[in-house]
Image (tube, each protein chain N blue to C red):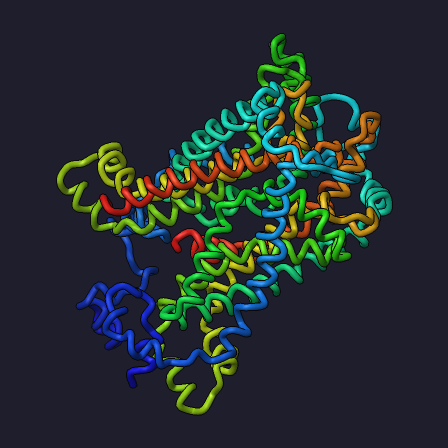
Length: 310
Length: 310
C-alpha cells in the first residue's frame, strides 16, 4: 500500500467486495463470465438446438416475404426459396387494389374493436354481478347457464344462427362482432370471476361508505382493478376476432364488407397462377398482428400467461 | 356489518345455513340485474334459441327453404347408414387424437427447452410464439404452396421419388400435412400453459434434488413431469375439443380432398347451409353435440379425479 492512497481506496482495499467490477482481476473474471447476466450457467447445447428448430417458424415467414417480392415469372419457377432477383414492390400495390385492402382492413378492424370492447364490458359486468350476488339463486343459475354453453360445439348452432342473423338484418360485420361477444362470454366471465374473487371486498366498502352507487363502485373501483385480466381477455378477443375466418365467411352477405382472411380466397381459384400477388396479399393480411406482436411482445406474453394460470 | 359479509360469501356451502336469514332479507341492488340480464337475453337469442331451433328442424325434412314436414327420426337413421358421414367422423376423431398427441409432445419439449438455461431467452421465446398471432387460414395457404410446389421440387432435385408429388394430393397422407400445420399453429398456445406450469415449480426443489445427486434426466422424470401432469390434462381437454371442430386449416390445405379423404364433421355440417340438406346436417350436428358432450363429461370426471390426487 502506497502512502498516496485516498481514504476511499483504503476502504475498498480492506473490503474487497466494495471494489467496482473494473478493478476485479486475476481469478475472479472467469467466474463472472461463466455466471453471467442471466445469473446461471448457459446451456449452449439447448440454445443452439432451439435456434435451429426455430427455423420451422422462420422459414415459412421468410418464404412468404421472398415470394411476395418476386416477379410472377420467378415465382412460378423453382422451389421458391431463392431471394427475389429484383424486388417487385408493385406486387403490394396490385394486391392492395385487387383485394380492396382498405375496405377489408376497415371491416376487420371494426369487428375487432367492437368484439374487444364488447367482450370486456359484457363479461366484466356479468362476472361482477355473479360474484357479488353468489348467495342469490338467480345469479348462481345464470353462472351455470353461461358455463353450460361451453359444452355446445359451434357447428351445432351455426346453421340456425346464419338464418337468424339474416332475419335480424345482422348479416354484416356488426352481427359477426355480436356473435364473437356472445360466444366469448362463458370463457371470459370465467377468467374475470376467478380474478374478482381475489380482490378484497374491503376496497369497495370504502367507496360504498362514501356514498358510491353499485354502478359507480364498479366503474371507478372494480373495473380499474380488473385491468390485468382485462388485458388478457382483450388480447384473446383481439386475436380471435381479427384472425377469424369461419364467422365472417358464413355470416357476412355483402362481399364488399368481407374481412382480411376471407378476401384471400380470391387467390384460391383453380386457374390462379399469380403466386407473387397472392403472397403479397397474404403478407399484408398477416402484417397487422405481426407488427402489434413485435412491438408489444412482452405485454402480450404476460397477458396470455395470466390466462394460462387461471 | 353483517350484510356485506354475506355479500362476500363466494364459497356457498360452508356458510349457507348460518347466514340464510340475512340472504332472505338482503335486497339485490337493481343495478346488478341491469349488468347481467341484457347479456343473458343476448346469450339466449344468439346461442340457446338457435340450438333449440336447429334441434327441432333435425326432426323435419326442411331443405333450408320452402315447405317442410315432420319426419321423426328418419334423418338420424339415414346418418348412421351414410358412409360419407361415418367416414367424416372416423377422420375427425383420428385427426383430433393424432393432433392432440403431437401438439402436446411438441409443446412439452418446447416448454422444457424454453424453460432451461438458454441464452437469448426472450428472443427465442418471441420467435416460437409468433404463430399464435397469425391467421390459421393464411398460414395454411402459405403451407399449401410449400407442400404442393416447394417440397416436391426439393424432393425431385434430391431424387426422392415418393415425395416428388404433392402430399396434399395423396389420399393416404394428406392428413399428415393437416396435422403438421395444426401443430405449427397450436403448439405455442399449449407451450405457454406448460411454461406456466414449469415456472410454478420452485427452484429449491431442483436444488435439493441435485444435492441428492439427481442428474438432469432424473430431475425431469421425477420432478418436472409429475408436477405438471395436471397441465397435461388441461391441454388435452382444451386441445381435443378444438381439434374436433377443425375447419379452416383443412379448407385452406385440401378443401376436404382428395375426394372426401380429409373431410371433417364440421365441414359436412357447414355444407348443409348451401347443399339443400339443412335438416339432415342439423341431425348430424345434434349427434356431434351428443358425442362431444359425452367426451367433455368424461374428461371433466378425469380432471376432477386428477385434482383430488394432486
